[in-house]
Length: 228
Image 1 (cartoon, rainbow, N blue to C red):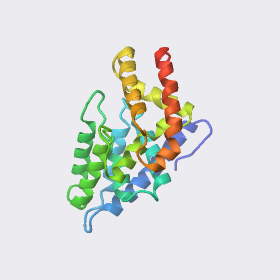
Image 2: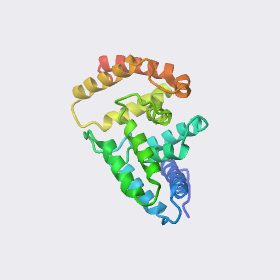
Image 3: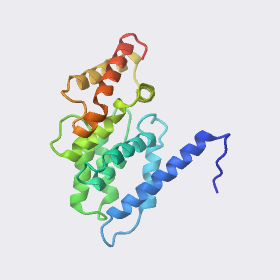
Image 4: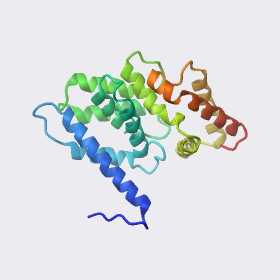
């Protein structure tokens, strides 16, 4: 049995988080299986966990997935199809190759292979559409697609210390020069500020909009000063 001790709190926390995530994913996967489909939840979880534990991930890892799930739980009474939305959260960053422009499309491919013949086609197609919405290149009309976009960006509205920790983790995944990173980051942040609303759903707009804008303005000042 795993023993938790005060000399290894980080390892203990990582273990407990991993076990809770495994149990939650496995329960969801089994609920979504079609009648008669074989139970392969553990093998799918192992494949997911391997992907999200890749050494080049500093932000797009299981911490991000856990945070997204927490946000889903906050809004669970507002979404239309909770199982579809949660499944999309689990798979939306499963493929994350640095510098690639088609990670979301490849993540949908990963999910289609995993779910092929085991889940209803309509369910699989809906999850794929939700994953593709996290490209953040359009405003979707579907409410659950709006929710997954907001959930994916929810950390912009967390307290400043948390926001800066996440920003540093995102920067650690960037392979280019600092100036190239700053240019891209400024363009992305300014594009968010130019939106009428960063968060599309009323739920997350009320929860995080103002703090997200405050955080972005504050980070842009640091970038201009070359302190971030």
